[in-house]
Length: 277
Length: 201
Image (cartoon, rainbow over all chains, first blue to last red; front, side, top):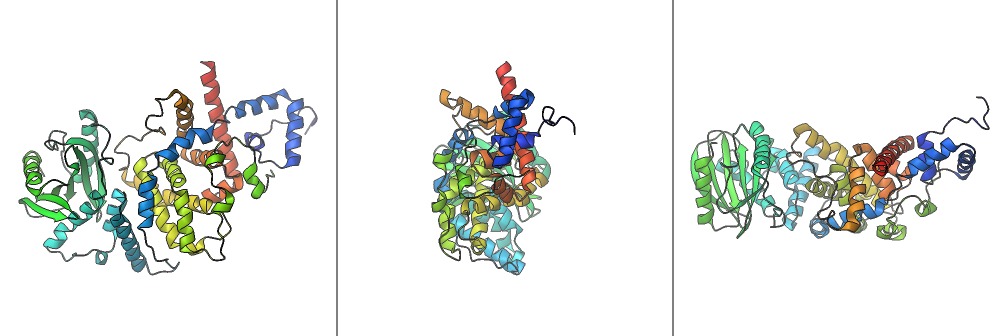
């Protein structure tokens, strides 16, 4: 090293950043201050990096206000979790987790894809009615109803995306579900399209298309890729929600909402006529 | 390179942190008993919910992912309440849990299925933030941070928004302090360049 006094190597950005952030020990800090006095290049680099000292706290304050705090608090209040020992047997822990999630969701918040994933990911003995019979075929109704029960008008607030956006969202569902959904086919009379997304249920892809019915609130069309017997529209009721469901050779579909069953069934019949599943 | 030890006074350092008013004082956040009770963890969660959600949103850039992250964080924290060390910062412990849920589960799942991105990722912009002139800068700052790579974004958020010391950031992210320093330095250089570009136009 030569001429340490006036030709010190430029300190690293890490060092200068720690200096700016007040993270250096006093001795190191003093040394850098001296260096900045002697070497304009060092001072200039510190000045440059200091431009990134932005009002971060203020800038991110609105996100605190945007947090759905009341919903999260309700979720937390409804959550009852027995502590899991580090070496707990996996199925048991999973069952507990399942119970906790179900409890928290029943108490009222969010978690659509998470809920569906967890319910779906559980061992089969975690699933009630899983006996391979008709109850099993309708088990997903209860799961869908559980999370749809959490939807409010706010959940499906916002505006209707343009047809191109709708088509793009649907296109993302088509491949995993082996479908050919179009904005026209999934139209629900009187309701406004909100979004289409893919969830999973019991490791099967589940398409969820949400709508806002100005009169009754949130509405969803759900399609599960699952082979079965072709059947026409039938009615079911879960958790205070009406369900109109039908099946094709490779898919099961349902429309769910807070509409009177007859009205929902009529809408489902119309969708079924346009939708090839 | 020696950096200051984290301690009580570390919370008083005069870095570029402007969020002191929203931070909950160390006393309120410290556990009081010898063994952490579920009630204590519950209380800690309760007062930290908005900040957890915000961190979840900064990581995932999506509201519903942030919802998921907070929910899973609550579950984990309650399940493992016995692992919380009374007297330490419960908010930092919760940030660490949220971070690990993000890395191990939520993000992994999104990457695997590419399903969370059916909708284009929303930018770090709050509804209506653009409307008020006073919020323009806030929007710009959030966008600048939002454009950083994820690892840098998390470090910047924890250090500069939440006001954690380098050591605390390292603990939350479960990486060496040196890694935190290089992420912050890289982020600072990038942000400074962007600011200079903006000034030059």
